[in-house]
Length: 243
Image (cartoon, rainbow, N blue to C red; front, side):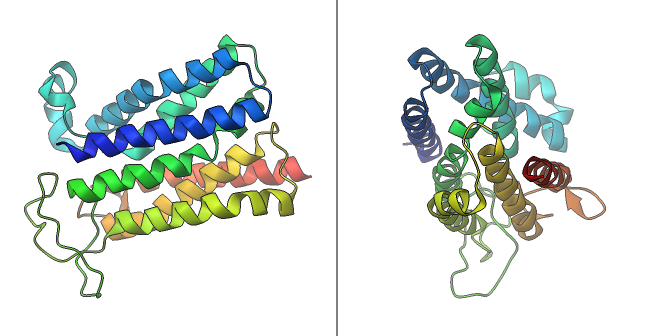
């Protein structure tokens, strides 16, 4: 059984269930919720794969195989690309159903953490997205098909770190929303979710850089170069919204 796709499928189901539950709670029409749930998975996967083809040199050099063959689509996905695909889906749903964009985004926001939790379980069992070598008691040697040639070395289980952080954010989000006065429908819930998610990725990438994530420039990975401005923009918009 391919556990990578199993857990990614479960991530889609769980994230969609939360999306639909929150959507009904805040009065979104059923058709918009169904469209969002149905469209988000293919759009997320396409964006995740295309982003990987762009940033991974070996896939970029052989882009015809990576994009135009079935075997090329069997691997090579990144969560940052998936988030971008979901964001495009939400924009499309809001436009199709003439809904306030802030409402659609805020309803979907917490689903980012649900998808992150199960998506990283998929990465863990697949043996990909691991961290740098370490000797800590919880270090893990990844020896499954998704690993690199250095996978037998004990490494930081970065996937587990992200799972724990995403679960913590998911639990604490309602508390923070109440304390900070984040109103659902203003877009602020989505912004804080994306800021937390990209901030997590920005930090954990320091353990992946040069190991399971290629360095782009100035010692930073492609993901970090995306996360830095994303976090800054989210925080700036949150600050502007509270003035």
